[in-house]
Image (cartoon, rainbow, N blue to C red; front, side, top):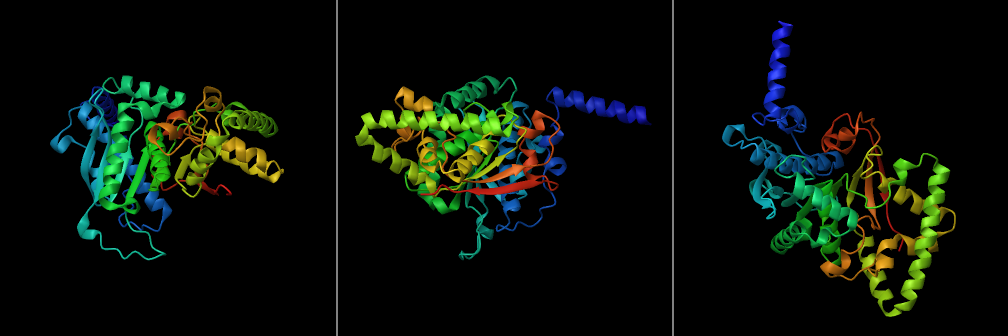
Length: 377
């Protein structure tokens, strides 16, 4: 009996590898939050679950495409239909034909909520972006875009240019209050960059960023001693502040515009989801903790200057503050973020794949630490 079960499981695994069958992680009834039969839009766990599942829907859309799963074999639709959404638009990368994002629309017949100061309404549109898929059909393009994240040049990619056009179109139709952005990993980088541009243009969007890449050295993971971490970051802040004062002293006429550009972001508070065991995003924890510590020890003035600048941007002439146009405001690193509502997964992740995965964010056994980081103007 057990031999037969084991043989059956091995056959299933082979079929998954060969692309003849969906992975359990792509099947909503196995891996999705099926316990959420009624959504309370005031509940942050519920909103997080919806946003992260719609990102998973994009991953599954692309896997359906890659494995030619159509009709009853397709798995993606379960990830949005369960939450009463429809697929309004599929976003395709012209470079490789892969599906990198989607626009989901909340079904209008149930959009009958009264907007009061104390109740959150469901979004009319959620624009979601997937991260890297390490499969032959998408791997090459995704990895090139991952490199762009490290080099702070994601804004120049055709994928991002297409994404921001789609977002602007949705906002023009329904207004920014009815649109959410959501993304995981590389997709979180797209959503964060787009969120910053829209906020600077006067259209802040509710934004859910799962495991967003931090385009700097991951001190949080590399250095174990808390004292040494603080020392390294303190030295970094001093250098950045010094260089910023020297560079911007020479270009004084731009200083007000750059500061104004950074301060436009201060009131925008995206939802940031990080796992301390994930080196791709864990540095956000140290980034915000360090800023608080600098204010506590009376070095707030130094940190005010340092936090709005990137050493790389300063030395290459990017300035770090940028104007409100797409090209100016995107030359800065993604992680230059004044404010965020951070959720830290304090559950133990067995490996990198789990620590960086999207599934952790709707896990009902989730243990989290929630911290609001608001930039003091």
